[in-house]
Image (cartoon, rainbow, N blue to C red; front, side):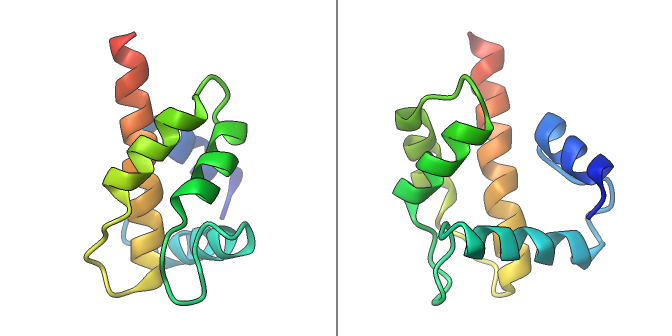
Length: 101
């Protein structure tokens, strides 16, 4: 995953080429390593709040937990797609929340 993909994800909530599975699987790996995504494919809302509130400065842990609860029920079967769409949902919700402030 290139730096430009990470920057695009952070700024817009999506990666430039959503047909490319490699960056989505990279994100799955990151979520697994940070214990946000468990081995059985479940998202840990509290761990998400810990990690994302550190990464996205200015986002309160309580706000992340609320967003993570809404975003964690994913229909995708592929763990790479689920991970990407979980992060996309979180970042888009955070961007929207900051627009309203």
